[in-house]
Amino acid sequence: MLYNISMKIGLLTGGGDCPGLNAVIRAVVKTALVKYGFEVIGFLDGFKGLVEDMSKELSLEDAVGLLPKGGTILGTSNRHNPFKYLTDKGTKDLSDRAIETLVHHKIDVLITVGGDGTQAIGLSFLEKGVKVIGIPKTIDNDLGGTDQTFGFDSALYVATDALDRLHSTAESHHRIMVLEVMGRNAGWIALEAGLAGGADLILIPEIPFTFENAAKVIKERERKGKRFSLVIVSEGARLEGGKQVIMRKVKDPTEPIRLGGIGRVVADKLEEIVGLESRYTILGHLQRGGSPSPFDRLLATRFGYFAVKAAAEKDYGKMVALKGNKIKLVELKEAVDNLRRVSPDSDYVLAAKAIGIGFGDE
Image (cartoon, helix red, strand yellow):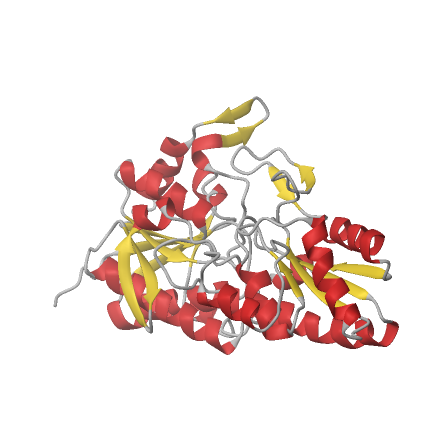
Protein backbone atom coordinates (compact mmCIF):
# COMPACT_ATOMS: atom_id res chain seq x y z
CA MET A 1 0.00 0.00 0.00
CA LEU A 2 1.28 3.48 -0.87
CA TYR A 3 1.15 6.09 1.86
CA ASN A 4 1.06 9.88 1.72
CA ILE A 5 4.63 10.67 2.79
CA SER A 6 3.74 14.31 3.33
CA MET A 7 1.07 13.53 5.96
CA LYS A 8 1.16 15.63 9.10
CA ILE A 9 -0.32 14.19 12.27
CA GLY A 10 -1.52 16.45 15.09
CA LEU A 11 -1.35 14.90 18.55
CA LEU A 12 -2.74 16.07 21.88
CA THR A 13 -3.40 14.61 25.32
CA GLY A 14 -6.57 15.87 26.98
CA GLY A 15 -8.35 15.49 30.31
CA GLY A 16 -6.71 14.18 33.46
CA ASP A 17 -3.19 12.78 33.34
CA CYS A 18 -2.50 9.10 33.86
CA PRO A 19 0.29 6.55 33.50
CA GLY A 20 0.85 5.53 29.88
CA LEU A 21 0.36 8.87 28.15
CA ASN A 22 4.04 9.21 27.37
CA ALA A 23 4.12 5.62 26.15
CA VAL A 24 1.40 6.53 23.63
CA ILE A 25 3.29 9.64 22.52
CA ARG A 26 6.39 7.50 22.05
CA ALA A 27 4.50 4.93 19.98
CA VAL A 28 2.82 7.55 17.79
CA VAL A 29 6.08 9.41 17.13
CA LYS A 30 8.15 6.31 16.41
CA THR A 31 5.52 4.68 14.21
CA ALA A 32 4.82 7.86 12.28
CA LEU A 33 8.45 8.85 11.71
CA VAL A 34 10.13 5.45 11.30
CA LYS A 35 7.50 3.30 9.60
CA TYR A 36 5.57 5.85 7.53
CA GLY A 37 7.76 8.93 7.22
CA PHE A 38 5.03 11.20 8.58
CA GLU A 39 5.53 14.35 10.64
CA VAL A 40 4.03 14.72 14.12
CA ILE A 41 3.05 18.06 15.64
CA GLY A 42 2.28 17.91 19.35
CA PHE A 43 -0.20 20.45 20.71
CA LEU A 44 0.50 21.55 24.27
CA ASP A 45 -1.87 21.42 27.24
CA GLY A 46 -4.65 19.55 25.47
CA PHE A 47 -7.16 21.50 23.41
CA LYS A 48 -5.78 24.74 24.82
CA GLY A 49 -2.87 24.21 22.46
CA LEU A 50 -5.24 24.25 19.51
CA VAL A 51 -7.04 27.40 20.58
CA GLU A 52 -3.93 29.29 21.63
CA ASP A 53 -1.69 27.80 18.90
CA MET A 54 0.88 26.23 21.20
CA SER A 55 2.75 23.36 19.59
CA LYS A 56 6.06 21.69 18.89
CA GLU A 57 7.27 19.29 16.22
CA LEU A 58 8.07 15.94 17.79
CA SER A 59 11.27 14.13 16.82
CA LEU A 60 12.68 10.70 17.62
CA GLU A 61 14.82 12.36 20.28
CA ASP A 62 11.64 13.56 22.01
CA ALA A 63 10.54 9.93 22.33
CA VAL A 64 13.66 8.77 24.14
CA GLY A 65 13.03 7.58 27.70
CA LEU A 66 9.26 8.03 27.57
CA LEU A 67 8.12 4.42 28.04
CA PRO A 68 8.37 4.28 31.86
CA LYS A 69 7.77 7.98 32.46
CA GLY A 70 4.53 9.11 34.10
CA GLY A 71 2.50 12.14 33.05
CA THR A 72 2.65 13.64 29.57
CA ILE A 73 5.44 15.69 27.99
CA LEU A 74 2.79 17.56 26.00
CA GLY A 75 0.91 18.70 29.08
CA THR A 76 -2.83 18.32 29.45
CA SER A 77 -5.93 20.17 30.60
CA ASN A 78 -9.54 19.28 31.37
CA ARG A 79 -10.73 22.90 31.40
CA HIS A 80 -10.26 24.05 27.80
CA ASN A 81 -13.11 22.74 25.68
CA PRO A 82 -12.85 24.81 22.46
CA PHE A 83 -16.64 24.70 22.07
CA LYS A 84 -17.14 26.15 25.58
CA TYR A 85 -13.89 27.98 26.09
CA LEU A 86 -13.67 29.83 29.38
CA THR A 87 -12.79 33.51 28.95
CA ASP A 88 -12.96 36.60 31.17
CA LYS A 89 -16.43 37.23 29.75
CA GLY A 90 -17.76 33.71 30.23
CA THR A 91 -17.71 30.81 27.80
CA LYS A 92 -17.24 31.20 24.07
CA ASP A 93 -17.19 28.87 21.09
CA LEU A 94 -13.60 29.09 19.81
CA SER A 95 -13.67 25.87 17.81
CA ASP A 96 -13.16 27.75 14.52
CA ARG A 97 -9.99 29.29 15.92
CA ALA A 98 -8.79 25.79 16.85
CA ILE A 99 -9.50 24.61 13.29
CA GLU A 100 -7.55 27.59 11.95
CA THR A 101 -4.58 26.36 14.00
CA LEU A 102 -4.86 22.95 12.38
CA VAL A 103 -5.04 24.53 8.93
CA HIS A 104 -2.08 26.81 9.70
CA HIS A 105 0.08 23.81 10.61
CA LYS A 106 -1.28 21.81 7.63
CA ILE A 107 -2.48 19.01 9.89
CA ASP A 108 -4.02 16.13 7.94
CA VAL A 109 -5.39 14.18 10.91
CA LEU A 110 -5.73 14.93 14.63
CA ILE A 111 -5.12 12.13 17.14
CA THR A 112 -6.86 12.84 20.43
CA VAL A 113 -5.68 10.90 23.48
CA GLY A 114 -8.16 11.05 26.33
CA GLY A 115 -11.34 9.90 28.02
CA ASP A 116 -15.01 10.58 27.35
CA GLY A 117 -14.66 14.38 27.50
CA THR A 118 -11.72 14.46 25.11
CA GLN A 119 -13.34 12.05 22.68
CA ALA A 120 -16.64 13.96 22.81
CA ILE A 121 -14.75 17.10 21.79
CA GLY A 122 -13.01 15.09 19.09
CA LEU A 123 -16.40 13.95 17.82
CA SER A 124 -17.59 17.58 17.68
CA PHE A 125 -14.54 18.47 15.57
CA LEU A 126 -15.22 15.45 13.35
CA GLU A 127 -18.72 16.80 12.72
CA LYS A 128 -17.12 20.08 11.63
CA GLY A 129 -14.98 18.32 9.06
CA VAL A 130 -11.77 17.67 11.00
CA LYS A 131 -10.23 14.24 10.45
CA VAL A 132 -10.00 12.71 13.92
CA ILE A 133 -8.77 9.43 15.40
CA GLY A 134 -9.18 8.74 19.12
CA ILE A 135 -7.06 6.83 21.62
CA PRO A 136 -8.90 5.83 24.83
CA LYS A 137 -7.29 6.92 28.09
CA THR A 138 -8.72 7.13 31.59
CA ILE A 139 -8.01 5.57 34.96
CA ASP A 140 -11.80 5.39 35.43
CA ASN A 141 -12.12 2.74 32.66
CA ASP A 142 -15.53 4.17 31.77
CA LEU A 143 -15.09 4.89 28.07
CA GLY A 144 -17.41 2.98 25.75
CA GLY A 145 -16.33 0.94 22.76
CA THR A 146 -13.27 -0.60 24.41
CA ASP A 147 -12.88 -3.40 26.94
CA GLN A 148 -10.22 -1.39 28.78
CA THR A 149 -8.50 1.97 28.63
CA PHE A 150 -4.83 2.44 29.32
CA GLY A 151 -4.14 4.01 32.71
CA PHE A 152 -6.68 1.86 34.50
CA ASP A 153 -4.35 -1.04 35.24
CA SER A 154 -1.75 1.27 36.81
CA ALA A 155 -4.38 2.97 39.00
CA LEU A 156 -5.76 -0.43 39.96
CA TYR A 157 -2.31 -1.53 41.11
CA VAL A 158 -1.94 1.57 43.33
CA ALA A 159 -5.37 1.06 44.89
CA THR A 160 -4.75 -2.65 45.50
CA ASP A 161 -1.37 -1.94 47.08
CA ALA A 162 -3.03 0.64 49.35
CA LEU A 163 -5.56 -1.95 50.53
CA ASP A 164 -2.75 -4.41 51.22
CA ARG A 165 -1.02 -1.82 53.36
CA LEU A 166 -4.19 -0.81 55.19
CA HIS A 167 -4.94 -4.42 56.03
CA SER A 168 -2.12 -4.77 58.54
CA THR A 169 -2.85 -1.51 60.36
CA ALA A 170 -6.58 -2.26 60.45
CA GLU A 171 -5.93 -5.68 61.96
CA SER A 172 -3.39 -4.35 64.47
CA HIS A 173 -5.68 -1.61 65.82
CA HIS A 174 -9.01 -3.44 65.40
CA ARG A 175 -10.34 -0.65 63.20
CA ILE A 176 -12.55 -0.07 60.23
CA MET A 177 -10.28 1.28 57.49
CA VAL A 178 -12.01 3.09 54.61
CA LEU A 179 -10.18 3.73 51.35
CA GLU A 180 -11.65 6.26 48.91
CA VAL A 181 -10.60 5.89 45.28
CA MET A 182 -11.32 7.77 42.06
CA GLY A 183 -13.66 6.70 39.29
CA ARG A 184 -16.28 9.46 39.01
CA ASN A 185 -19.56 7.71 38.17
CA ALA A 186 -18.00 4.33 37.39
CA GLY A 187 -16.95 1.90 40.11
CA TRP A 188 -14.30 -0.11 38.26
CA ILE A 189 -11.32 0.89 40.40
CA ALA A 190 -13.15 0.24 43.67
CA LEU A 191 -14.66 -3.02 42.43
CA GLU A 192 -11.52 -4.62 41.01
CA ALA A 193 -9.17 -3.30 43.70
CA GLY A 194 -11.64 -4.46 46.33
CA LEU A 195 -11.62 -7.95 44.88
CA ALA A 196 -7.85 -8.03 44.43
CA GLY A 197 -7.08 -6.43 47.78
CA GLY A 198 -9.45 -8.41 49.98
CA ALA A 199 -11.94 -5.68 50.89
CA ASP A 200 -14.89 -6.70 53.04
CA LEU A 201 -17.20 -3.98 51.73
CA ILE A 202 -17.21 -2.34 48.28
CA LEU A 203 -19.33 0.76 47.65
CA ILE A 204 -19.74 1.85 44.02
CA PRO A 205 -22.04 4.25 42.14
CA GLU A 206 -23.83 1.52 40.22
CA ILE A 207 -25.14 -0.28 43.32
CA PRO A 208 -27.12 1.95 45.71
CA PHE A 209 -26.31 1.33 49.37
CA THR A 210 -27.58 2.25 52.79
CA PHE A 211 -25.41 2.75 55.84
CA GLU A 212 -27.50 0.21 57.74
CA ASN A 213 -26.82 -2.49 55.16
CA ALA A 214 -23.16 -1.55 54.98
CA ALA A 215 -22.92 -1.79 58.76
CA LYS A 216 -24.45 -5.30 58.66
CA VAL A 217 -21.32 -6.54 56.91
CA ILE A 218 -19.09 -5.14 59.66
CA LYS A 219 -21.33 -6.46 62.44
CA GLU A 220 -21.40 -9.94 60.91
CA ARG A 221 -17.62 -9.99 60.84
CA GLU A 222 -17.58 -8.94 64.49
CA ARG A 223 -19.99 -11.76 65.32
CA LYS A 224 -17.49 -14.18 63.80
CA GLY A 225 -14.67 -12.76 65.89
CA LYS A 226 -13.11 -10.56 63.20
CA ARG A 227 -12.39 -7.25 64.89
CA PHE A 228 -11.45 -5.19 61.84
CA SER A 229 -12.81 -4.51 58.36
CA LEU A 230 -11.57 -3.07 55.07
CA VAL A 231 -13.91 -0.84 53.08
CA ILE A 232 -13.23 0.59 49.63
CA VAL A 233 -15.52 3.29 48.28
CA SER A 234 -15.63 4.95 44.88
CA GLU A 235 -15.70 8.76 44.99
CA GLY A 236 -18.98 8.69 43.05
CA ALA A 237 -20.80 6.20 45.29
CA ARG A 238 -24.26 7.48 46.10
CA LEU A 239 -25.61 8.03 49.59
CA GLU A 240 -29.16 7.29 50.57
CA GLY A 241 -31.49 9.22 48.30
CA GLY A 242 -28.99 9.17 45.44
CA LYS A 243 -26.84 12.04 46.68
CA GLN A 244 -23.12 12.22 46.04
CA VAL A 245 -20.51 13.94 48.19
CA ILE A 246 -19.13 16.98 46.38
CA MET A 247 -15.68 18.21 47.32
CA ARG A 248 -15.99 21.53 45.46
CA LYS A 249 -17.28 23.28 42.38
CA VAL A 250 -14.95 24.89 39.86
CA LYS A 251 -15.25 27.26 36.91
CA ASP A 252 -15.32 24.51 34.33
CA PRO A 253 -18.21 24.61 31.85
CA THR A 254 -17.67 20.95 30.91
CA GLU A 255 -17.39 19.39 34.37
CA PRO A 256 -17.91 21.87 37.21
CA ILE A 257 -18.45 19.24 39.92
CA ARG A 258 -15.47 17.72 41.72
CA LEU A 259 -16.41 14.63 43.68
CA GLY A 260 -14.61 13.63 46.86
CA GLY A 261 -14.97 13.23 50.60
CA ILE A 262 -17.33 10.27 50.77
CA GLY A 263 -14.61 8.22 52.49
CA ARG A 264 -14.84 10.45 55.56
CA VAL A 265 -18.64 10.32 55.55
CA VAL A 266 -18.66 6.52 55.34
CA ALA A 267 -16.00 6.13 58.06
CA ASP A 268 -17.84 8.45 60.45
CA LYS A 269 -21.20 6.80 59.89
CA LEU A 270 -19.91 3.24 60.24
CA GLU A 271 -18.14 4.15 63.49
CA GLU A 272 -21.39 5.66 64.77
CA ILE A 273 -23.47 2.60 63.90
CA VAL A 274 -21.01 -0.22 64.63
CA GLY A 275 -18.99 1.32 67.44
CA LEU A 276 -15.59 0.34 66.06
CA GLU A 277 -12.98 3.06 65.64
CA SER A 278 -12.79 4.08 61.99
CA ARG A 279 -10.16 5.80 59.85
CA TYR A 280 -10.29 6.89 56.24
CA THR A 281 -7.70 7.43 53.52
CA ILE A 282 -8.34 9.34 50.30
CA LEU A 283 -5.97 7.98 47.69
CA GLY A 284 -6.54 10.91 45.34
CA HIS A 285 -3.99 11.78 42.69
CA LEU A 286 -1.58 9.06 43.78
CA GLN A 287 -3.65 6.93 41.41
CA ARG A 288 -2.72 9.16 38.47
CA GLY A 289 0.99 9.51 39.07
CA GLY A 290 4.05 7.38 38.62
CA SER A 291 5.31 4.87 36.12
CA PRO A 292 2.78 2.85 34.07
CA SER A 293 2.37 -0.86 34.69
CA PRO A 294 3.74 -3.30 32.09
CA PHE A 295 0.17 -3.92 30.86
CA ASP A 296 -0.44 -0.20 30.34
CA ARG A 297 2.89 0.23 28.56
CA LEU A 298 1.97 -2.56 26.17
CA LEU A 299 -1.58 -1.35 25.63
CA ALA A 300 -0.51 2.26 25.09
CA THR A 301 2.12 1.16 22.58
CA ARG A 302 -0.39 -0.93 20.65
CA PHE A 303 -2.94 1.89 20.68
CA GLY A 304 -0.37 4.38 19.40
CA TYR A 305 0.72 2.13 16.55
CA PHE A 306 -2.81 1.31 15.43
CA ALA A 307 -3.87 4.97 15.57
CA VAL A 308 -1.09 5.95 13.16
CA LYS A 309 -1.92 2.94 10.98
CA ALA A 310 -5.54 4.11 10.83
CA ALA A 311 -4.33 7.59 9.83
CA ALA A 312 -2.17 6.11 7.07
CA GLU A 313 -5.15 4.16 5.76
CA LYS A 314 -7.40 7.23 6.03
CA ASP A 315 -9.75 5.44 8.40
CA TYR A 316 -10.95 8.58 10.16
CA GLY A 317 -13.70 9.14 12.71
CA LYS A 318 -12.66 6.04 14.63
CA MET A 319 -11.18 5.19 18.00
CA VAL A 320 -8.70 2.39 18.58
CA ALA A 321 -10.10 -0.09 21.09
CA LEU A 322 -9.21 -3.26 22.93
CA LYS A 323 -11.65 -6.04 22.08
CA GLY A 324 -10.70 -9.24 23.84
CA ASN A 325 -6.97 -9.41 23.13
CA LYS A 326 -7.19 -7.67 19.75
CA ILE A 327 -6.97 -3.99 18.82
CA LYS A 328 -9.94 -2.93 16.71
CA LEU A 329 -11.35 0.32 15.34
CA VAL A 330 -14.76 1.49 16.57
CA GLU A 331 -16.81 4.49 15.60
CA LEU A 332 -15.91 7.51 17.73
CA LYS A 333 -19.61 8.12 18.33
CA GLU A 334 -19.99 4.63 19.80
CA ALA A 335 -17.27 5.34 22.34
CA VAL A 336 -18.79 8.67 23.39
CA ASP A 337 -22.45 7.64 23.46
CA ASN A 338 -22.04 4.42 25.45
CA LEU A 339 -20.10 5.03 28.63
CA ARG A 340 -18.92 1.83 30.28
CA ARG A 341 -20.14 1.31 33.82
CA VAL A 342 -20.29 -1.67 36.17
CA SER A 343 -23.28 -3.96 35.72
CA PRO A 344 -24.70 -5.13 39.07
CA ASP A 345 -24.94 -8.58 37.45
CA SER A 346 -21.36 -8.64 36.18
CA ASP A 347 -19.07 -11.59 36.89
CA TYR A 348 -16.97 -9.36 39.15
CA VAL A 349 -19.93 -8.44 41.36
CA LEU A 350 -21.32 -11.98 41.43
CA ALA A 351 -17.91 -13.41 42.34
CA ALA A 352 -17.42 -10.80 45.07
CA LYS A 353 -20.79 -11.54 46.63
CA ALA A 354 -20.16 -15.28 46.40
CA ILE A 355 -17.04 -14.99 48.56
CA GLY A 356 -18.77 -12.81 51.13
CA ILE A 357 -17.94 -9.25 50.07
CA GLY A 358 -20.78 -6.83 50.76
CA PHE A 359 -22.01 -3.94 48.63
CA GLY A 360 -24.31 -2.32 51.16
CA ASP A 361 -27.39 -3.19 49.12
CA GLU A 362 -28.80 -6.03 51.20
